[in-house]
Image (cartoon, rainbow, N blue to C red; front, side, top):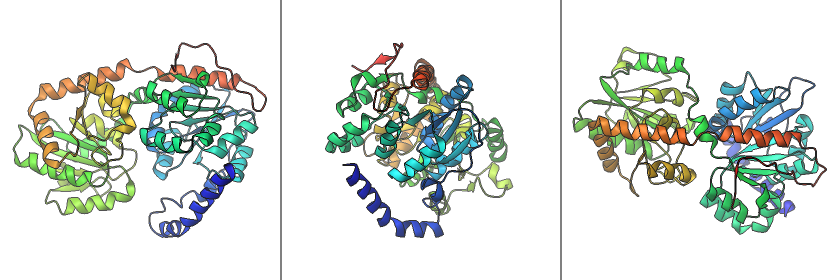
Length: 451
């Protein structure tokens, strides 16, 4: 089965070569870091210290790892830490956030046996920590052969992924058996990974690291820069449309035009932060055609910036700094059927959050918020008219908007603490020195076990 997996991976890579070539001349999204993806890592300062390898896929996982990285560096000063990502945006966030403290930040290798062996030979990690949803058969297999413990951290299995994994359950069971431990976000995630074949004694639920990362401080310098340049003050109410996908920007723009024309109690303004940088130009074209006054964050500063109706946040890594300025946050990927994005960053700051109907990637978080009336979720097949009505109602009722935000902040407060319990398990993995093929024995810890 591993041979078939390797063949399929190779065929897929070869089939995409023309796209990679086109990308090399356009966005460079996929070609960037190719040598690292083939296992040639950047120079890592030599030290007589063991090494921990933490892998984050993209922006969401990298942001969620912020408190964990800080805690790892504080708790294990006798270890070096290296961090890998898969995407270009994740790489930039990781370098900005951890570049000065981590021994290296690099692109994750393509999961061929030879590339994985090359990377493991260079790093020789004492442990590998994989954030959330990444299951790479060759990496896990090679780590087991070398008696390197591997932990799935903040594990999550969406309903869509679960259905796919069930189709190859016998293979997935073998792959999951190479994990030393799986620390899952919720009971549902734990139940799914258990049904796929993960041994019960290796499944624990310390909670969701995203609740801990939500309270991470933003860059106050960037917040001040945004406030000063664009004149954000109490004379207007700012709506932040975060991590948007096509066609959500058009939906948000149309909704904004409706509430602008309906004369709400205070002047509304809109900041749009598309999820993917390669779409910045596309969204700029939508704004150009909208008839609204607008400005790009990346453009030269102009006097008109202070009064424009819409700001396009066409930068990477500044969304977190924009949230403290917001009165309402619409979190995207939820009207478009992408499963939603992280609502906790604005929620933890007491900001009223609006989301669309598609939130399956954050099902447990959304349920926790809905149970406490701490989020506003649009109905299925949400339209710009429905979004406009929701935004108008919230802008027209300060106490309602603030109460929802305060309840959201309380939900975040009650669910923190996963980082500390995760660290306890990582400490055990680092202490473990088992022979190849033996499972890592789990300690008696105050962590809820999967039922």
